[in-house]
Image (cartoon, rainbow, N blue to C red; front, side):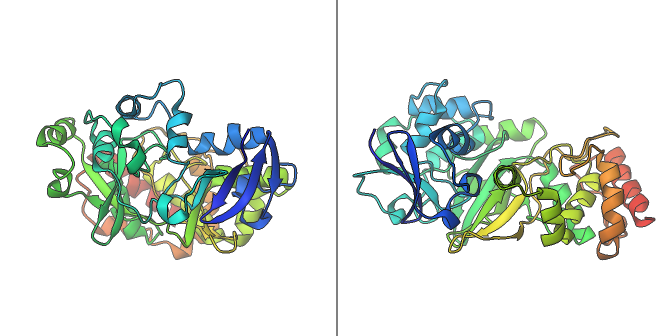
Length: 359
């Protein structure tokens, strides 16, 4: 087996040879691999799996078909692009590969529009002849919704199908809670990558295509909570005590936001931390995102951000006792109902705001 390296930009941080691992720079390792006994299985069945597109993702099978890669082995296609991602600056490099970070970086290089069209809109395309010369983040993008990265004049934007993001974004604005801002995408931009018929299909299903600007960069990575939990498990750290000490305002604000929004899909892969790519140190929770499963009518949604087994309501009531004075619970009452949700959903939002204000 040839030597393989996990790289952070142009810095090798871990070496793999004959299924054995040698740490080269502990502080700069991916956080889920930061323990002295890291093994080949930890990398191949942990780190790389979490950087590989889920086969159940919307339009995933069309992407694999476009590259003529077996649906039973999506790992291989992520490997074609060195496991590069737009979440961070890690990538996989084999010994002898004459590649630099500047050649691999998805932050710097043009992204293939045909791949974006398939990932977002389900357009059928063939990519195999282009593998040697294209860059795409779509094979390492996480989540199940139809989405794609598109480069605009002022930077990279994540486009996705999910009109609820618009309503959630405006409500969080009114509450004064830190979040990623979503806006409706422009048809003119989308027509540069696919025909009108693909856009019509989305709109005919009552959906909208929305977009938000990238929050990671070549200076700052985003680290999912689930990776931090792995680190805590290896290093005997209680992750909940740690976050309540290091960034309590954003942690408790998230619990308040999820209850008010009726968000049934907060989980360890869609919230987490900023990380300094120069030092490997965490810098607090990044702004809230991923609310396309908000406005659930379920009254007993379990919290996935609490140490205790409790509902979103119970977590939010406890969080409001800490953070409540910093949140404008009257804010949503002063705005119009977002058109993306119905009257029942809107009443629920206002009732939950009123409930938490009284804590």
